[in-house]
Image (cartoon, rainbow, N blue to C red; front, side, top):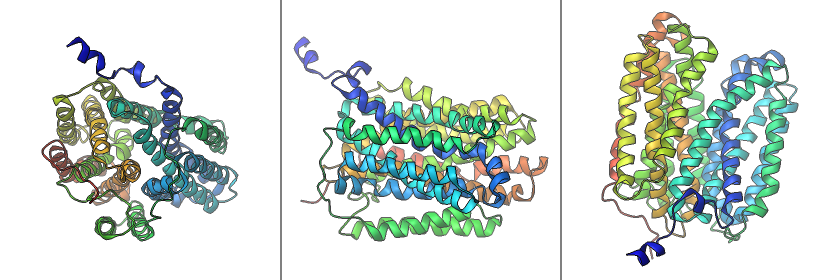
Length: 472
């Protein structure tokens, strides 16, 4: 027994960071930080941007354009890593993001500023996608849960610090400097990538780029992005439905294409990949109402200051981070149990928020927000590990990078659905006590069906599903 124990590979944090993995781990965390923090930084600088550049009506496009670019980049990252090699592709992605930051920082008018945001989205989406490929290529499977827990922690920190950094720069009257700040970080990332990603697969040329699938995906995400800013609820819902139909069309085309965007049978819910991606997409989409609408609702209903409301909404990130690290070492049966517990916890959190938000029960909202974060902290790393473990060698690059794209696509769709529900509740006509009360119910009630789909997919993922492999 002692001999067997001695032969069992270590799964401690010390072993994770041993054998030269610490610098790689730090680089991956920096890449995730750049993607997460830059996606959130405009939340607090847009009033300053609007005063200087005009274009108040385009506030949400600063995020929507960024997200569309990030999703397209994340979806294509796997194939690009095969064509250029992971080291070169990651370095080039950093340079793209640097260019986007420079365009936004120097923009003389709002159109060029928004163009810079799209370019930043492309660069950061590639960075995040390549970071997922690096995790799959460079870390043993026994460490994947801890690596994903760390990635979740970085996302949680970025959720708090991203808007805070933007606010600090805006408060001093130098909102442009926030983009120079990110440009400097990204330049350092780009310079370090070729040295720290040694050992990754060399460029193989790959089968090419799935242009048709990326084109349809772009149209679908454009429809969802427009739905997120349209005030008319009927039109908004129609655009969301169109976007979802186009996403389904991408999966259908991909299953029949010579050059694939997704792993084999990624749309088949009887496989690990199919069930895993479905769970990630649906659960992420179901969480977006709290992230987008909790701060303004709490300011109106509970009389909280913008800062206090922001801190309450940050409880989601706090719960995610603490829960992820708490279960990072779970193995055996608890691997599957935490996936199921997390998925069910999301439904419970939505029910708590439906009860607490309209009545301005701030402690109840905090409980709901923390539980919402815990739902992902308990489940996300194990879902990611199961998906990566099921990938064939042929699909490892595209399958790992797809995790980022699936998450961001779910976020965009969920935000659009929550926006349509809010507009139906009267949010677009002005935030009054009555409209805020109704919105506080419907932004959560509208996504419960998505949450149920996510729970169903999570149970399939942890049940007897097949491992999708390339045909012989």
